[in-house]
Image 1: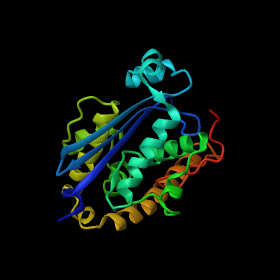
Image 2: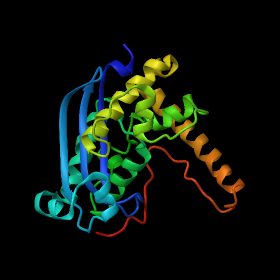
Image 3: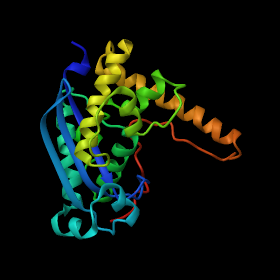
Image 4: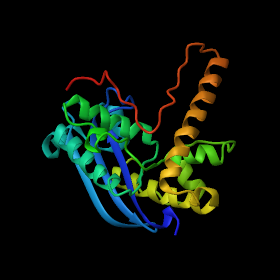
Length: 241
């Protein structure tokens, strides 16, 4: 049985912004998905310790008033999410995140910001793995397809329903279902074991980043730099709490 028909862990964060060095967690969700159906669910609401910008509220709908009234302290939320993810990695269960480089880097920055053990430290020095990122896989297996590559667009391409985009639980479930759908369309992806697929994605992401950097430089930005690291970048300059 291929990895896509076994237990997958959908993961998503909704945040205060788009820069993982500065953004904070607002909501997070971890959903157990087996053969495309949710079988377990955890969700967190954080008080991020800073004002949630209006543009972020417009995306995910969590107001400052609600976060302050109902949210748990940010350090507790980051710690809890990290512990849950690590519990799956320790047993070899894949964590699925759409654009994992953003969510895992931001989580790593939050842990550092609050002087909490890193994901690697919680794993005894090992890197977080296996991670499955439909965003990275889709860009590799269907490189020249035109159009957007956001979660909504790629779900539409693969016939995956997304009922409430930018809701952490909905996005986490959609990411897991999307990974399954991609594997079903592309047997070579389905045939890889989770560990090998993780390694392939490291290479695919680096190839994409190098190509995108070259594109930006050709288009008039000679100093453009696109980070090649996937799925997690340790940010030494994570903003203080």
